[in-house]
Image (cartoon, rainbow, N blue to C red; front, side, top):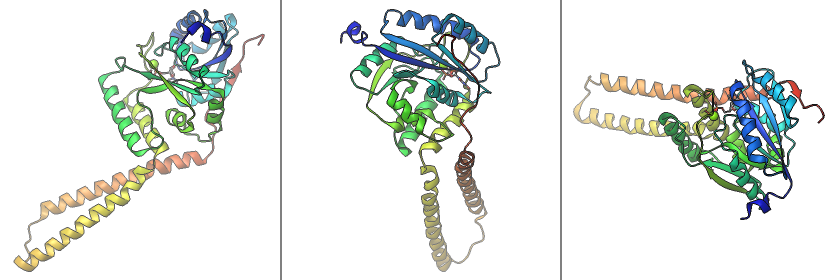
Length: 321
Ligand code: UDP
Ligand code: MG
């Protein structure tokens, strides 16, 4: 494929960037973007930064950068709504023919976007960035992530491609389709997969953060995983019918066994241990079942309020735009 020829085609590209306490990473990010896209004048790049309730100098840094660079739009959210909501805000404001959500910490190398654009020009509406290494993640994060994908893909439709994050190129039709989805709980990975469209994959090496620290800890990732499972599968609800049937079936067999035993050998009093085990096991099972019902009920409850996904304090577009 001839790269220079392909990139001579004019295209408007919006990069949507959620930022939460990232004052120290923004300048490096913009610098890198300029380096990567300057040799390709046919690609008209603009940036939508979504300030997700940062408590540091993020907003003022962004506004200062906007003074120098009219390609920057800043959406200031009223508080921290989380990365999924911030990404939705970015997609809502993005104007480009193609849109790429990207993290500000440069873990996703922007050179990959050039490869993605080539595939887009060959007719793909979605181009996924798939990381071929997870070295930048801890062992625990790698293992739990791989379990999550295994479980999720067993019980949910559509399946999530493994090792694919939010870094992807989307055509305008895909972005518009995503924006029609009404849910308030936005598990973006799942929604991205749900909308479908002609999809290609580009492999890349995910780098360590340029500066700052990760905003996700173990507990937030666990909740994120629950969000994913409950948003795209009702199997955890349905499984209890079968667990219940299995346990009752076994109890009936056990009852039959006891009746025969008593008939043959008479009643014996011991059995305290097995009784306690059965009682505690079954109450545990019931509590888990109720807990899972609660997960879904809670989500239905929140969803039924129909609150907006995020609130904007102010939208800053560059002067002269
Ligand atoms: N982020 C956000 N809101 C949040 C948490 C994170 O907008 O509540 C942004 C963050 O500023 C960064 C991106 O989401 O641009 C990815 O965050 P991070 O690098 O901490 O995640 P990781 O790469 O460790 O998964
Ligand atoms: Mg990161």
